[in-house]
Length: 117
Image (cartoon, rainbow, N blue to C red; front, side, top):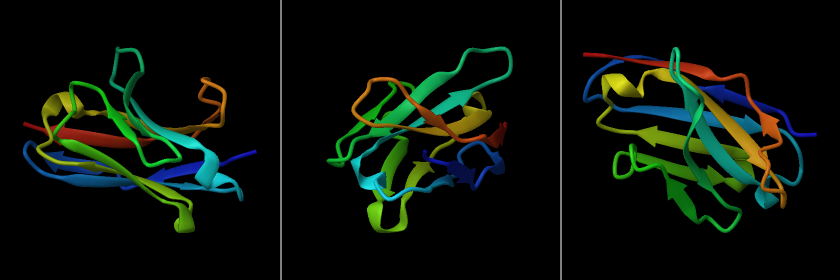
């Protein structure tokens, strides 16, 4: 069982930066792929990006070049650095974890990010 807790959300202005963290429990964190997702009001949840155990990262086109995902396996933490934020980035941001399965098995409760124009 893996428990995930996101932190770092808040209210910022367009163009600002914000960093989210996701702290994970469990001894096998380094073997998990970690993902960031978001859900805006009235919209479906979408992938922001992910980072594999190897450190390889993948990003949605909408955030590529603005967002960076990193992980610190010693701290069991994954980060989402968000730069040049736009009002359309407003959403609840969730982190998720999966093992070898392609299914995102574990989810955090989310943290709200609001970007004002």
